[in-house]
Structure formats: C-alpha cells, structure tokens
Length: 65
Figure 1: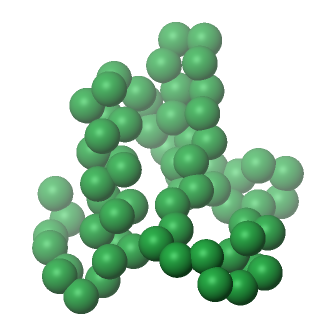
Figure 2: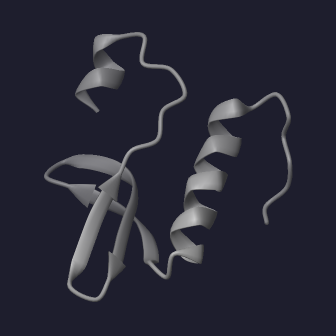
C-alpha cells in the first residue's frame, strides 16, 4: 500500500505482517508496552497480540526489544 522498496527487507517484512493481520480481521495499531515501542498491537474481539518484526536479530539491543 505504501510502495515497494526491494532493498529494504525490514520495511517489506513489516508491510507483509501488517497486511496479514488486517486480512485476518485484526484492528492494527503501533503501540507501546511498558516503555518500549511495539511494531504492531493487533486486536480482534477479546484477543490482543503484540508483534515485533525483525529480519535479523544480531545484537542484544534487538533481542531486548
């Protein structure tokens, strides 16, 4: 929906996850859990899921997130 960037794998992966959540009927927002930003907070009925998208996990900062 926002364009295609073939060299930005992380962006395309986030876009794919967002679209799949929408297809599954979730209301999707960017959120915060405690003091950390979360890529997506997806809600459907009484269900809430928190999704952090990462193409590579190569350092402790990414793992902590």
